[in-house]
Length: 616
Image 1 (cartoon, one colour):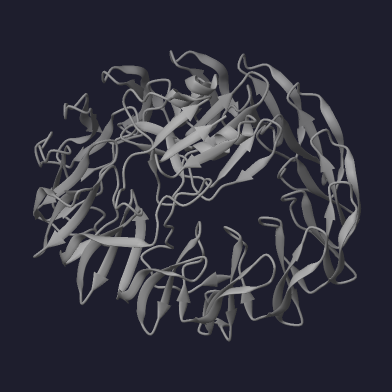
Image 2 (cartoon, rainbow, N blue to C red):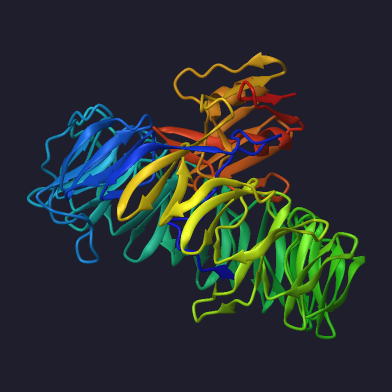
């Protein structure tokens, strides 16, 4: 169920720890003078005036004049600009002009000569294309470290190698442009765990970073190594090999999955079972269906009925239900005799199976449907919000968005009706009178009233007046606003009019940031540079370049943050839903501090006066 709401993106406004970082004030930080504007990224925003593009910084200063025919957002400290073309279209990925790169001072670090140009990665390399020559790479100085001579290239991964294609054959180059693995293969797949898949004569094998063959090209199909083993297909059957090429799980299976959090699923004679990370079969192939693990549990089906197993293969809920959902916050939806309810991880029915529809728990509350109306129950099964609304959305920040009179269009969006909010007592804290809603985010919501956009807090108090034709996403403390066809930016400020930087203390000691500082992201969560906070918390941090995933461990347990994903996962198989994602900024990986600290048993507080995150 989706809301049709004409924001640039769903707006999130405020830092969420112990309390709000902003009070009920807003300022127009950049006047409404641009013909178009884009979200801030890496401290800079693309703006357009009189058909030309430039950049402003967080003070509103136009640091790069509007002189380019198009410009892309800054990432990793650099932005792409074009001359002689225009904005990208369906038929022209880069708008048809010539491209180059600038730094944050506006200096062109390359000539504007490329036909295609891509973002820099966190290692400091960007693929570039010259039609008359080929594809290569530049580094942060603008030097063409891999000459534009290849038909195609991949990205550099942690092994320091990138795939290249020449004369229809594939190999790998290093960051100096040296061809480490000669272009002799028909196809390749990127390195993972120090091993790459390669293909010869339609058969797959594996090589290491020196190009040495660790498994000959004899497999009909092969997947990357995960947790030290790879699934491969031979003579139509699937099995697993280790990094020496040795068979560790026999070639018996009709299908198989990669190892994830120490387990892999296999299928034999139409039935599913499990192997653990020692390559021991911990569950015989007996189930008709076996879903992927979510929060430490997997739904399984036997003879048309569903139940649950844990990661040891133990059946914790017998297969007695017509259908089930995934576990979240300790509860899973189950269907019996055509009606839905909830069970806990012991299999106890905590909400009777009496509803027409159910949804996952969020903040201790779950949406339920009855007779075409929606309401909410708590973890005890008590119906806190009666089923009287036409539509409702999950609780976030202690409140839930509700709609009266709306309808679902052909794309699944809710259109029409009026919006309001209820709290966990069932009280309608914001009345259902608004034409559109972004959803409550950390105590603030963008609403549409009489055709104009404004912002309210969770009490219904007006924070940004209803005077704009559109309001965009708050990124790095600034949001695009539009009025009468002109664009500018607003920012929210605290009672003293201050929007200063974020500090972090661990055990009373300030964390030092050698080359990157914390910031509040577009979801208004505090993001921190990985290395510094890992040192402060006594954690080891690792980066998986292929998976694009950062991991933290204290030696006994581990949490993983995939880049650009709103889910973290842990070494015991638990999936943690987040309202923001780990990201890469200026070549540094940032992760949300609350989820990280709380996972390792720390408490997290917020000092509004000093804008300090306090970790104990």
